[in-house]
Structures are given as C-alpha cells and as structure tokens.
Amino acid sequence: MNRVLDFVQRNRKFYLVLGVVLVLNILFFILAGSRELALYNDSAKVLQDTSVQVRAARRRSSEAEKITSNVMEAQKRIHRFFDSELSRGGDPFVTLTGRIYDILTTNHMNFQHVSYDRKPELKGVLNRIVIHVPVKAGYEDFQRLIRDLEKISFPVFIDRVSISSVTGGEISATVDIVTFYGEEKP
View 1 (cartoon, rainbow, N blue to C red):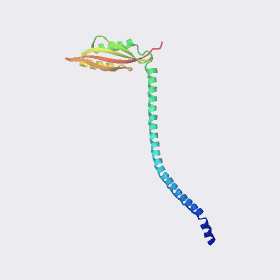
View 2 (view 1 turned 180 degrees about the vertical axis):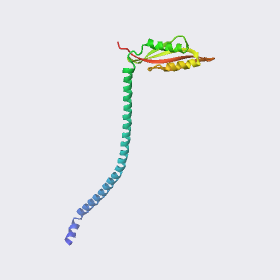
View 3 (view 1 turned 135 degrees about the vertical axis):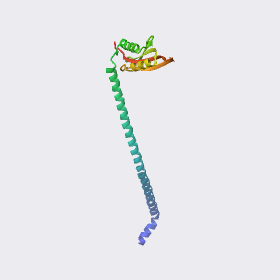
View 4 (view 1 turned 45 degrees about the horizontal axis):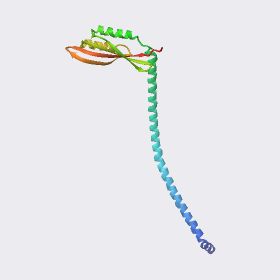
C-alpha cells in the first residue's frame, strides 16, 4: 500500500490533472444532460404547437378546396351561359324591342321614344345593351308594366327605374332594361 501511495505522491500532478479532467467531464455530462432534458420538455410543447398548426393548415386546405370547387362550378356555369343560354347574336334585337312595345301598349303606357346604349362588356364576346323607356302612366298601369317586363325571359332584366315626377296619380319615369348579346363572329 505504501508503494501505491508513494507512486501517487510522485505523480500527484498527473493525478490532480486527471481528477480535474474527471470532475469537468462529470460537470459537462450533467450540464449536457440537463440541456437534453430541457430540449425534451420543450419538444413536447413544440410538437403540440405543430399539431395545432397542422390541423389549422388542413382546415384552410379544405376551405381552399371548397373555394376552388365553387370557382370551377362558376366557370362551368359561365361557359354554359355563353355556349347555350346566350346564343350568338341572341334573340334578334328587333324581336325584343317589339315585345317591349307590345308590353307598353298593353299596359296603356304613354311613351315617346325608346333609346338604347350598346357597350361591349367582354371585348369580342359579349355586348351589354341598355334600353331606356321613358313612360307616363297611372300607378296601377305602371305596376303592371314592371311585372310584365320582369316576365321577359333571361338574359333580359330591369336594371333601374328612375321616377322623375308623380303628379295627380300619374307617374313619369324612365325604365332601363338590360340585355346581353353575344358578339357575332365574322
């Protein structure tokens, strides 16, 4: 045993350095272990947050798919409208104005001139025509006129009714009727 003690005393610097290195190693191990434990605890929170974000992303994705589906359905309806419901050139304009004149005379309207404006809605594809009908009539006749004009099949509808005066049961107004015509290809 004395030999061992003598040997350790002679080499004490070495053993002191070895002891310090061993203590430092243990300290580094404890610090690294506590850091790993903290990372492990933090990773549970990060995992939970990530799970919430994934669920939210899935919800947004399903909402985006619904919106995409709605847009595609709207595009199909628009194509169907242009291809079938809105025939190229539409109902002849003369036929439409004739129907409007028939409705005006049937409802005892006092009208002077009917004018219209043509505006390209989609260049080369669709024209928007606004027919301006200034009328003078009694209240009940005016109501019947509006009902009859609303019965004209799509794509014809009443855009605006501007009442300029009401005197003694007679209404002076301008009814704007809108229709659409497909642009005729040459």
